Length: 403
Image: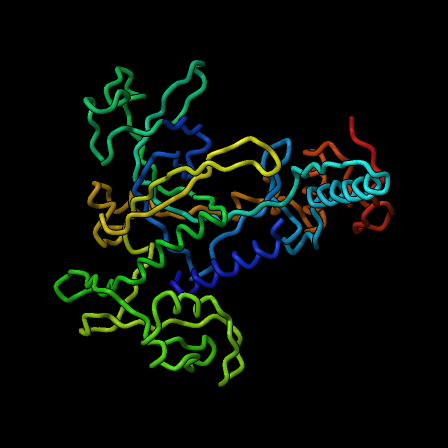
């Protein structure tokens, strides 16, 4: 994914969020092995995987339910805006609004209770996690947990890790982290993008002798995405401080030449003056990510929690391809291909974990998903047909709770 595409994506996410203004490590459970998690006080080496076909990152929209997080279907085309979770979230808000208005008329105080079904969203990126893990039994031997090995790197060390020294061979065995999905809240996405911005100031041009340039780059032009005409006079761009260029890149001007409305495309030069600049990105090298915490107050309460903050060391690791990085850790070509295989996120987050291919029609599939959503809430399905002849018709908000 290009730097400019990622910048546009982050800008879009910021606008969406602003328009809607209104959380020692324990181990990972085996079913969490596909997720990247970092506890406060920890650090890890990661490599961001390129997004195929220059697409935008995957945005997961979901609701927290008594049965856990469930995919929101309101924006999936075949559901035509239908989502049982959204329906009851709006139902809750409507009732709260009416109760608040009634309390105001009677002079009483009224405290609103937020709906737990409110839609949430995260941006999902895929990273190679270079940590190693041990599979360790818990108090109940039937339950197992993945615990990070205390030794970084491909070689175990019984003197530094108690699990590497375990008598049980199954505990002593080490499992490479590999490809994992990292679900980023918007502020965490911005922290990743801050590292991306720093990387784009480094030229990653490959020299003939096999080395990488690594000289500084600087922006010389801001061009229209539609016709490549200058949006700002080049001489003015060259005199701009970096912070002013950042401001220009967040704007969405109208091109005087072609009328295109969109973010500028930045053209950079390399300070080596020996070749065209090739701007770096978080996809070009391994990065060290550090996790720290900031104490925050829960809105409307005295309770506090630790908010995770991620920072990235972009200098400590050399610029190498992901294949070379993994080969240096002793992985074969076949293993590298397997490690770098991206997850099928559409399948992973399919609504209610139901396979649409098992149904003869889209209507049957949608019906099954909406029924499953209502069962998760133990509520009636508001989209269930109230007449013969097929199709869906919202049945109103007159349903009683299921017992």
